[in-house]
Length: 112
Image (cartoon, rainbow, N blue to C red; front, side, top):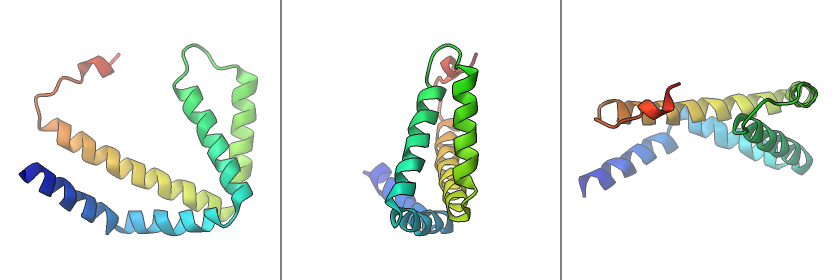
């Protein structure tokens, strides 16, 4: 099927991209420090939970999260890793958006 071939080509292009290479390089650096990996993953889980929760988030909880996030990002390699991760996620998000834009696919339910 032609779509499968195109998907594989797109996957190869992503894997060969400088964004992906930088993300993988920095992931390897983070993985050398298990305590840092655990701290980052904990913050990522909390962020996901807060973004997907219904209702208001306790201001003290949010402030505590922000302070811990700021603190861990003071380590240069952590900041670089998180920026590389966001860059890769945005690239994939943009690819998805561009794919769906050309289709008659109803996404209006995502709007307010």
